[in-house]
Amino acid sequence: SERIFPNNFLWGSASAAYQVEGAWDKDGKSESIWDKYVRIPGTTFKETNGNLAVDHYNRYKEDVQLMADLGLKAYRFSIAWTRILPNGRGEVNQAGIEFYSNLIDELIAHNIEPVVTIYHWDLPQGLQDEYAGWESREIIEDFVNYAAVLFEAFGDRVKYWVTLNEQNIFMTLGYVQAVHPPKVSNYQRMYNANHIANLANALTIKKFRAMGMTGKIGPSFAYNPAYSIDSKPENVIAAENYEAFNSSFWMDVYINGKYPKTVLKGLEKLDVTIDIRPEDHEVLANSRPDFLGINYYQTNTAAYNPEDGVSIGKMNTTGEKGSSEEAGVPGFFKRVQNPFVERTNWDWEIDPQGLKLGIKRITNRYDIPVMITENGLGEYDKLTEDKQIHDDYRIDYLSSHVDAIGEAIAEGSEVIGYCTWSFTDLLSWLNGYQKRYGFVYIDREEDDATAKLTRYKKDSYYWYQELIKKHS
Ligand code: BGP
Picture 1 (tube, rainbow, N blue to C red):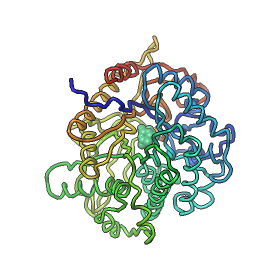
Picture 2 (picture 1 turned 90 degrees about the horizontal axis):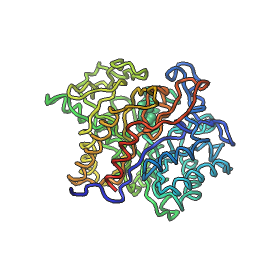
Picture 3 (picture 1 turned 135 degrees about the vertical axis):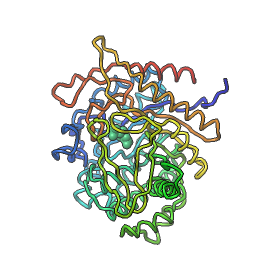
């Protein structure tokens, strides 16, 4: 059959520092906003945290060996800013550099391409205390300098860089829904912090190029393409608003350096004005990424939401199916259930065709290569008595999404890689350890004290192994 996926396609898998490493206070690492946040009672499922996580910090060699045995071509992981620059800036912690340097060498020795995320949400707490983190323009210089330390240390070996992971998620969950640090619910503050993050992203890309780095760089965006619930015109317009407010608002800036005009106008109705200064336009322009990272889990379906309609809803962080509540922006849109798709136990809609739609929209609107930097299914998994995990539901999920990518490529999109979320099981930020995503099962529940941390290959591990073999 015709070869759809190119030979050098990055068949990978992903993780993030806070979710796998543990060793939260070891070897000179400082406290991050997540280290602190999880200690506030009631913020996470059963008060779980990443203190131990899956102990990847000490077991990275075993984990890389599991990746190599699978045949992984790429591994996306994030670097903890707090390991590299414990004060957020200034003196570099050599132990931190050494840990990631060893990990990178270990990957390369096993022919696995490292894909490095510079920021996956674990801001140094010191910077949050000092100047309110993303709410201050002071962070821009600190962030760019942090990135430059990484480029300098690892740029000879790392060819793929992700600037910010899911800026749209850490902004909306941190500053509107108040379920991530800094636990704020204020549109005005969110949109200003978000603008500052846009500037940091753009200047990091500029810095990368100014330093003569030869690799590729881009942000990872959490894209939930929007549908209208039906063809009733007011619902279709609500879906258009949904796509503009929740997706184009970020992607347009990344790629074209401009916010969509209808959203800026719409924000006036919410009494929000973004502090965009004249010199910012120049910063946002000419920083087009080399690729757009897309984290895809689901589509969202929108309907008309009256002026007195729903606003901040409720997320399902317990795994009790059906426990989430409708959310929206009054006067613009609300999110409703799609009657045509199934949902996970955490109420995430399962929609492989939505991934194809999302990739095609990006190609048509931006004409930029895409890397799928996350895609996966969070579910309860069961370790059988003979130590097997029969996760056929995950195989179904992943294989249908791979097919959808193949279709998008066949229909004219450029996709350079696919990283599943996740390689091993890991901490789900708000949902504890019971919501599992990995190819490799980790023997632990919520309590660190009873964690065995033994690694077991799931059925999906062998499925991905075969898939990569078939495509190589
Ligand atoms: C993305 C994050 C990941 C990961 C994933 C699954 O938003 O980038 O870090 O956690 O979603 O989400 P969850 O753990 O909430 O199920």
